[in-house]
Length: 335
Ligand code: F6P
Ligand code: MN
Image 1 (spheres, rainbow, N blue to C red):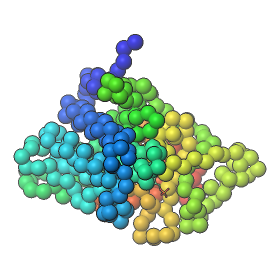
Image 2 (cartoon, helix red, strand yellow):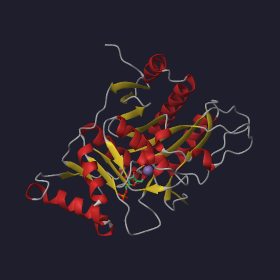
Image 3 (cartoon, rainbow, N blue to C red):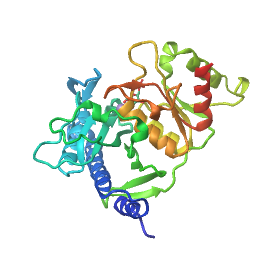
Image 4 (cartoon, protein in one colour):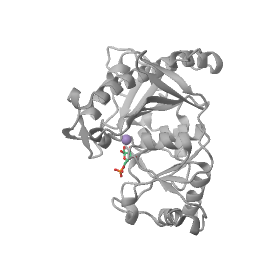
């Protein structure tokens, strides 16, 4: 049986959908970096890579050694190829400038280098999330690339994907025409197309939310989850099941595979922070993937990909997954 590698898939995309060679190269480089991150993650205690750095990122979260290592791997892999005008990462305060000795390209890469990193030390799935934007025309302007270049709505993404480092390592990718899943053949060192047309079922009986925050949620979320918990005897007349891995990549991957609704609502703990998840690095790329797979993604009030970002590290409430349930909770927000 002929196997389709990621490279072959990308070359065929260039032929059938005019995917630019520069974008093809970018995806290949990101995939290569993910293989390197996968290698480091899988070494665990043997590689001396577990534990914290003793530093905090711009969000005030403790950085793990693997957060920092994964960030460096992505930067080093992507800075020299001439395909990028700049990068931004959840782990860096400001936009990353392509060193002057390298040519610059037309794309911007933003990423969460190691999502769900609190799972690392307990050997549970983690991942890398990325999003690709076009760099706006700078009208010949030289000098550092500012944050404004990155502040584009999710609808402007030209590609998005994630790698999941789990029982299998997979790369899930959209270039705006459906969602493909590739499984890493670690003996051959290549990603092989194994999931050709990923679709999120429209209906579901499975939800994912951190229930310990219940007392802080807004009224529509309290109402919705209360109805889910009432099951067959409640207004939804159906028993629901709950799963929470606490790595967005893993929870979204499950939902892509068998349906479900993922929620990280805003809550009353820190009113100035609307939600926990980052719009640019997490919510937008995952929304692009979910929508391309037939699902829906909102912040309770509007489509996430329509939000105009105001800052690089902006946070947002997230409700994504199976259409029927995401539409239900979005509807509750307007009541
Ligand atoms: O990146 C943030 C993140 O780790 C997500 O991957 C995950 O969905 C969420 O935070 C887990 O949050 P909590 O710690 O509240 O379970
Ligand atoms: Mn994350």
